Each structure stands twice: as structure tokens, then as C-alpha cells.
Image (cartoon, rainbow, N blue to C red; front, side, top):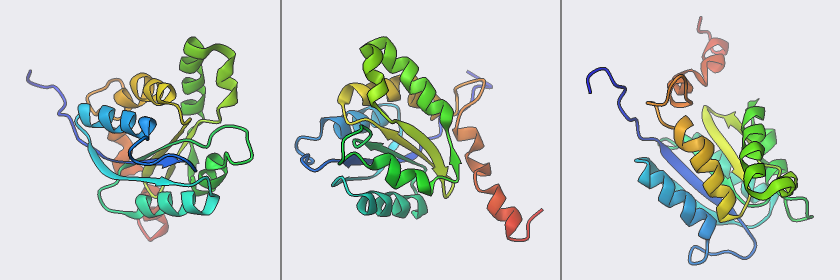
Amino acid sequence: MAGERPFIPLGIAVLTVSDSRTLENDKSGDTLVARLEEAGHRLAARSIVPDDKAAIADTVREWTLADGVDVVITTGGTGFTGRDVTPEALEPLFEKRMDGFSALFHRISYDKIGTATIQSRATGGVANATFIFVLPGSPGACKDAWDGILKAQLDYRHLPCNFVEIMPRLDEHLKRGAGGV
């Protein structure tokens, strides 16, 4: 149809945080990869790292600096146990926090699992002009986040607004600081 916005495929990296999962049994990572590819996006990178703050932060930081990675989605490590450190590893990287992502994720999750949603510290933010979404480790949580939030917000055709249309402006503060207008 004339006048419609074109689909713009994004490069999305998927990181599973787990001491026990492998690529062979990573159902949450598989769920995210299947959904992003079904939507028309490209898997830019995929990895599994242990529940270790430095390993998580190093991997995500590297991806946010890589050409071809527009979005990073992590799964795992958002609970309250001693080994759950993904938010602690990634929130210091955020230049901007996305409080609305957490609020909307919990709203969607509440409809599925009730008050158990309070046991997740799902979060989101922007670092190095790259969107980062930190999801719980269950396939259901990954489905809820993708189907209920990310699929639409990572689609340029979604109106009235979406993340894709603001991507060119995510680093404008850096350009200004480098002598730009």
C-alpha cells in the first residue's frame, strides 16, 4: 500500500545469563531468536555467560560498541537470589533508563502470573546508542516481553511511535559534546 512505512530490520544480540544452560538447552534464548527472526530482524550475536557481573557487562558493552548491533536482549539473572546480578551488571552501563519498560513488562506479566511478577527485576535502557532489555530467564517471560512490547516497539511501521524512529538520535548528546550544534 502506497504511503506505508517500510519495515527496517534491526541487528539484535541475545545474551543468556546462566550457570547451567548451554546452546542445546537454552529455551529462553531460542524463544527470543525465533521471535526476532520471525519478525524479520537479524540475529547479530548470541552468547551464554555465567551469572558473573563482569562477564555480563563486558559482553553487553562489547556488543553495544559493535557495528550491526542495534538492540541487546538479555535473559536470566533478574531475580533476588545471590547469583542474580544482571541488573547490577547492566544498569551502570545505561546512559538512560527506561522505567516504562519495567512497568509495562510487569503489567503484562501480572495478567499471566499474578503477584509472582514482583520477583523479577526486568529493566531496560540505552547505552552507546543501543537499546538494552533485561528479561527474566523463563521462556514465558521472554514471550511476554517480545509479544507484548518489543515486537511493536522494534517495528518502524508501529504508530504512533516506536524505538526505530528515534535510533538515529540516541547519540545526539555525544555529537553536541564533540563540537556539534
